[in-house]
Amino acid sequence: MTTATSIRPAEPHGLPRNMTFDVDDWTILARHWYPVALVRELGEQPLGVTLLDAPLVVYRAGDSIVVADDLCPHRGVPLSMGKGDGQTIACPYHGFRFGGHGKCVRVPAHPDSAIPSKLNLRTYPAVERYGLIWTCLRPVEDKIDIPPMPHWDDPSFQQINCPWIDIGGFAGRQVEGFIDVAHFAFVHTDTFADPENPVVPPYKTRVTPDGFEAEYRSNVGNYPIGRTDRGRPGFEWLRHFRVHVPFTATLEIHFPDNGRLVIMNAASPVSARQTRMFAPMCRNFDKDLPLQDVYDFNLRVFEEDRALVEAQKPENLPLDPTLEAHVMADRSSIAYRRALRTLGLSQFFTA
Image (tube, rainbow, N blue to C red; front, side):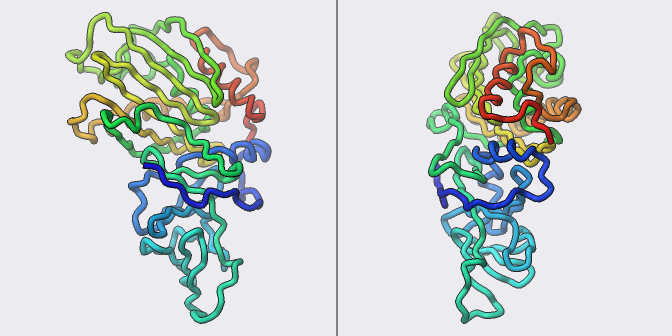
């Protein structure tokens, strides 16, 4: 199910305080959509989140979800410190209440006086999709540019919303690691990969309107280590990557017996140095198994990746191809950096 609220351009305003991005890069990245929370996380109480260095508050106002600056316009206290009732949230300092579209609906000190519009919150569009709450800080007219996810709406597939994971690294580095096919035998040897099978067969990338895609075929399986009974000798595993710039990629894995597993890697840039990674999944097999098993395995895989992403230097992603060495297995990485350059981002994501 998809719902949208407040799909209108935000009013021009200043940049976040203590910004970690280059100003021009921030302006470009702010035009794109990112997830900021799981829908199931949001109850009556507000959530405080950060996107592109901008502190935001997320709260429920009846059937709508509101995303706004996490700042009371009265005396500058974070509204995420306040309390909600499912219809409004209250500032913890003076009890001002805010409802749908960020409108101030009550000033306790003057309950019978007209409320000036200056007390209304600056809000951003909010869309529910894939069990996530998405928003955009500088929306382009009414365009909702949320990446597609294969099979999510197929009733024969099970939809899974894994808990998010925080990574102390740049979103571009994290996405590049997700689409990298040469690291399996060295990074994921405790989860699914074979350290004796490091060879990367030839593959190609294809440019798409929103980025690129790549189909990678090999005999490296995707079952957890120890599940040899689930494999099939000689089976060729197809991994179909679809990259939607700047920071979202989906991986569709073809299992034996027409099984399909789709993983969305939605890297939400908290800052230039921190990423909140969301991973909704869907599959058409093993639908009766406990979800906690999926959560645990997924966490182990991404924890293996996190250790490397957090250690990479430079921390940000060099878009100039001459600044790092490349091999044939890096075709997806090269295509990703090329796609980011087409957005007009700086060569180094300088912070």
